[in-house]
Image (cartoon, rainbow, N blue to C red; front, side):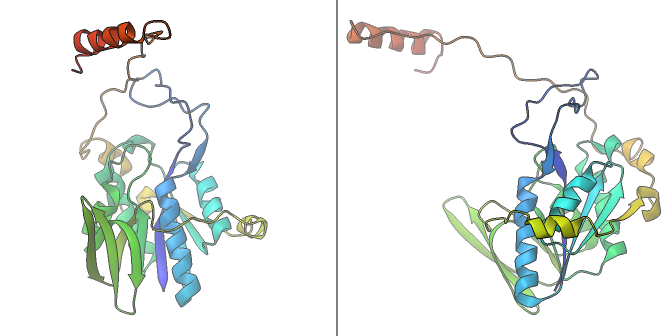
Length: 264
């Protein structure tokens, strides 16, 4: 069973986000970068498939030089090979452009029996990249999967829907996007960390895929970010002391909710 896992390198979810001077990007200077948490579920599922059915796991990413750190972590967790398509800075937030790069990269490094990705990157992809890659490759796909069974010729996937669960069957090869709850991702082992340092990461440029990144970011762009801004700062709250007059405090609370918050 040959699996390909799509990985994106994103800001740590605990990072304090600041808007850069251009107002179209975040300030990256003090950001800690991590493997997107949803991609961790995809990677863990691929490793479990390898352990159950033998085979291999290849992790593929499209991003700047720092993304190799994420690839090394995936190797330390149990992936066998890593592929880095360098670039992406000019395609911030353009899910279709990113998918147009990932799809031929998968063809170049495959074939694969199954492609897995997180349901979304913690950033700006809007949960679109996985499905778009599948469409560009002509593969069936199931999104937001929380339970997966892989047979010899197909998969049975369960996804959560409002009020219940939906079970979908799809033939192999296919693409699956992983949702929280699919599994419990493992941590890198010391042995895995040491071994990952010896693995050669296959790297190539967008041009090696027959694509022009400048065109994808320019005339062919389907998405352009015109500005980013932080939410307005919250004003100080109102503290009502009701120890001496609980009824009065309750009346004041009701007044504030009605007249200021417009909640009642």
